[in-house]
Length: 360
Ligand code: 5AD
Ligand code: SF4
Ligand code: FES
Image 1: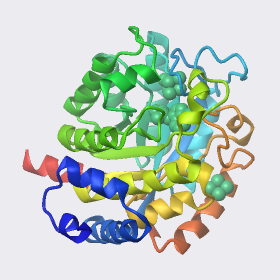
Image 2: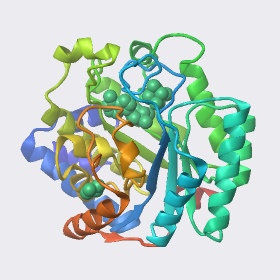
Image 3: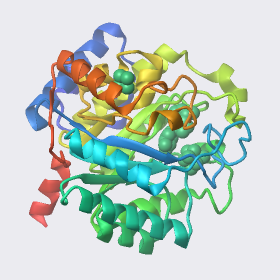
């Protein structure tokens, strides 16, 4: 049965659900196939994106997230621009190829200008050599355009779940958290010319395998260039924590995430797929396992060590006691072991995006 599915050109929703349900023997067949598809379409190079989580101040109140506005149990921080630039310089000197700027969500003129200025300066300090991904939530089309012009060329905005009903179980239903707006933002990003990435959380309370299959079909339909998805990990200072008894055990959420990554690789052979940090919160070599079965991007944390402890979206976040240099050495060794090569100094753009551009 599984071989029939894996040999098909087009997977139906039922096929995807079958693959999500596979037992240990069959899931290993799935993983072998997704590893082959990765090797054939994009090879075994892994690209680094040095991740700078520059502020945990957020205007939103997502029910699952540890840095949501209403959580009073954390210390808020906002790294100075000069220190952000130092981190970017570290990434450049370490030959990482790209950086990711991420923070809690803030939308106002001052923030737009601040990011615009940072983007320009990062381009300057690296002679235009560092690639820049940003992950700064929902913004106006105008803001997205300004940031694109200032030098960002990839944008990550997770849809979190493509099921509208589930979306509103995970977020308050108000103008700050609007499902349609999130979809609009993704369309705008694509229109402007960003390599556009989205993603979901896997193992949310109330989420079914049918939902996950729909999420994968959603990604295929909107034709994303990149994806970052990881397991949902409960956080005790969030409203969603009260549903923790509905969750799959962590190990099962982990396996389900690997399966979802593998299936996405079958559906979209040449996109970039990140090995999410949340995988490592469950399994010490979780990210390496993801690289083996289909992922090709890793985001080493280059946030200065003293702030890391405060960017806790979920419990058990890895590397919080480490400094950027520790992660570099640790990762280099890990990736060598996973049978992949590091694309040092390269942007590692989505091949999917490059091919699309060629055709239009
Ligand atoms: N578990 C896993 N991932 C989470 N995120 C936020 N909170 C959690 C959590 N509790 C993810 C969301 C968001 C990204 C920045 O972090 O998908 O888009
Ligand atoms: Fe803010 Fe993002 Fe967390 Fe939502 S998921 S509360 S937008 S940081
Ligand atoms: Fe951060 Fe290993 S990747 S210490």
